[in-house]
Structures are given as C-alpha cells and as structure tokens.
Image 1 (cartoon, rainbow, N blue to C red):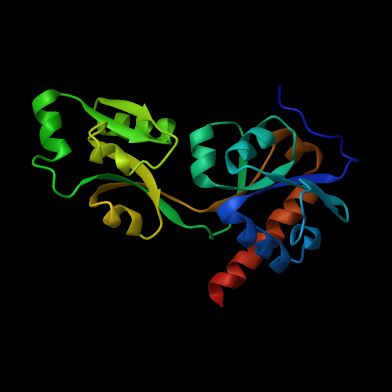
Image 2 (image 1 turned 135 degrees about the vertical axis):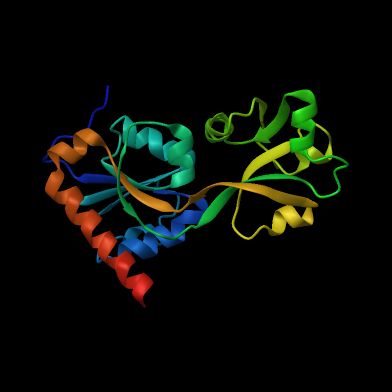
Length: 224
C-alpha cells in the first residue's frame, strides 16, 4: 500500500547521500528552498528546515521511501529509479549528475561478444543493474545470462566471469584504465525530482511549488 503523511504534516523530502548530495543541496538553494541544515547535518539523518523535513538516504533506498510513502518527494538519479521499477511520479529533470549506462567488453578480446553470441547463442553480462540490463537486451532480442555483482564491475571480463558488462560511466576513464571499450549505449541518467503519487494528490500545491522552483532554477542554470 502506498501511504503518505497527512496534508497538515511537514513536507518530507529525501536527499541522496554520495555523489548527488552536494549538487542536490545546491539545487535546492538555487531554487530558494531553505536547505541550510543539509550543509552540515553531522550524523543526523533527518533534519528540519522550516516546514520541510529532509531525509538523508542511501541512493538505492530513495525510490523505496518515495513509493511506500515514507517521504513525499525526493531527489534521485534516473539510474536508481529505473532499476527499482517502483511507482513514483517524475516531475523535474534536474540536469546534474549526468552519466550514461553502457555495454563494454575487453579491448583485446580475440572475438567480440557479438561474435561469441552468434556462435554460442548466449553471452554472460555482469552488472549492478539487472533490471535495466535485462530490459535492454530483451529489447534487442538477445538472450543473456545476467550476473549481478556488488563490487567493481570492470573486473568481470578480466577474470573471465562475464563477456560483457553493463555499468555507469561519466567520462569512460575507469573503463579505459581497465582496457575496456564501449560497445553500445544503454541510456543516459541525470538527477530527477520525483513524488509519491498519494502525496502529490494530498499535498499538490506544496509539491508542485517545489517542483516549479527547482525547474526554474534548472532552466536558469542551463541558460547561464
């Protein structure tokens, strides 16, 4: 069941830890949203700024918090939203945190994975994102065995556990350092502002206002 706090409660917004955190705080500030307490939260995971309660969360947990109504809205990467596959409403593409999903294989492979696929009828793909990977290859009509790993995906072809990898890259540096080349693009990812469907229905004005302010600040940043 999707739940949300009552309409009179503070607006609860999740902000992801890690790579998107500083840009998320900066985006809120540019939008004129009080997020001062997020700059130095210490060990606090929930901080109050006026009538907004911010929840500092692990990125992969953010879609879960939104979908199940633990928060009303959130900033999250498209990558974790797509991988989670949960019911949330995307309101704004915030533009920062840009990266892309790619398929990669070893530069020095004797035969490309495509050639191996034509010969064997199946290839192994290592990834942290099995849902996105499965959907991509299903759309291509390729049968793959997906191996989910939690560590450095780049090592998988180097030790022979997989023929391809599907991973996120911003510059491609890590791939090149591990003698991997991009075979194809899967999708691009940026940070998004999303909302819980029930919260959007009960706190429409407050969530819409925050979304509009973030969208305006994003447009201004792009035009600068």
